[in-house]
Amino acid sequence: MRWTQRIDAGPRARGPRRGPLRWGAAALAAALCAVSVGTAAPAANALPVNDVPEVGVDTGRFKLPIGCTITLGGLPVFYLPTDVDVQGVAPVQLGPGQEFWLTQGSGSITFPSWLTALTPILGITKADAKITNLSIGASTSSPESINIAKDKPFEIKDIAIEAGKPLKVGLPVQGQPSFEVGPFTAAQSGATTLKFDGAVAEVSLRSDWGFNLPIKADCKATQGNALLKIAIGGRAGQPPAKIQGAPLNFAEPASNELVGIINAPYSCTLNGEPLDIGIAVGANIPLTVKRNGSFSFTRASGALTLPAATVNKLVDKGYTTASGKVTKLNLVSEGGVPETQNVAAAGIDIPQIPLVRDKKIVLSLPANGTLTAGPFTPAAGAKTVAIMLGEAAADFTFNGGTKATGSCASPTPKVYLVENPVT
Image 1 (spheres, rainbow, N blue to C red):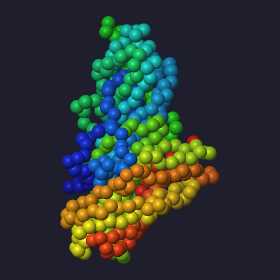
Image 2: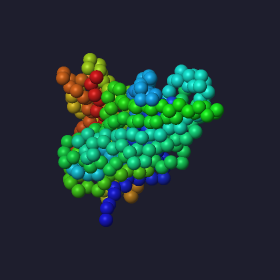
Image 3: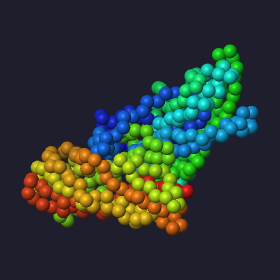
Image 4: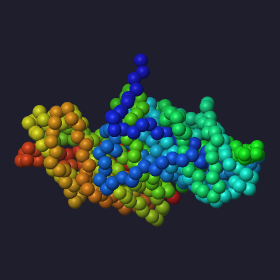
């Protein structure tokens, strides 16, 4: 019997959306066709607790610069630079040899109005698209790339084209199931970097009077294709990680930027006794960094998760309420300067919360406002700058008077927030 790890965010979670696979698909079909996709509401300063995924889950939305070579009759006719807007869900850590998927993926792409302004010349009003290659890679994993359209191309029929208006193309089309990319099998150690490897679409432009113009769009990332990095470590033999039901409610990021929430598992001690918690970080983060430039996290905020088992341990001690202050949350860079930054150095208040047996707690921190994270600059000779979660600490007060100090080691294996190619 094959066991699959399933992490469910509960009744508030949104339904599946297509994952990173679509990234390319959207890009291809995007080549000359349009399907409307709605935009999520912008996030508040504090991290909404209903948007925080379960501990061990990474949710994100990326706007990756791409370029599509448009060919007619096998000859390139023009090159179209644009962006693909994609989102999906992945585990934050992997075990040696563990199977994993990218799930709940969706994507869209917007093309400029000048593109549709050309269509009336030939009386073109509709298009059909067939996506024959939509490849997502996972470095060091097996296989290193999966073309999810290889055996069954994705087809979109009768896409309306409105002359002189931007085209917003989205996948999946209404009624289709969500995208899943996998399974990949992780290496025995190190890390795997997920990436957009490209997509190809065959587009047939049609007029009402029967004219048909076949075009092919070949789309590649243009400024670096790293989407997220997952460290590998811990015990072998872990069940496949195939996450479903995670909340995805991100506002559209800027070009070459990601917005996401990672809820990292932490093993901590409270006055020397072990406790497990989750620390979530949400932010908008650039996807690349210039050699002589820098980048910072914007709209950054966090959340503290106390799983029900941890709450029960506190209740067993006779605690009914908890409050305190986070004094340390280190971000650690690989290939960047500074090497360590404590984003909680000024202290983050933990408001008083009730402790109820068997009831998980998810608390936005800070309750209002944002955190300052960065700037980070590339170290001399670095090809990438990766930012990870490091040590954490907090001072607690229980039942209004009992003091305790909590400290947490850096997650093992590592938890990466972003890996930026240096361009």
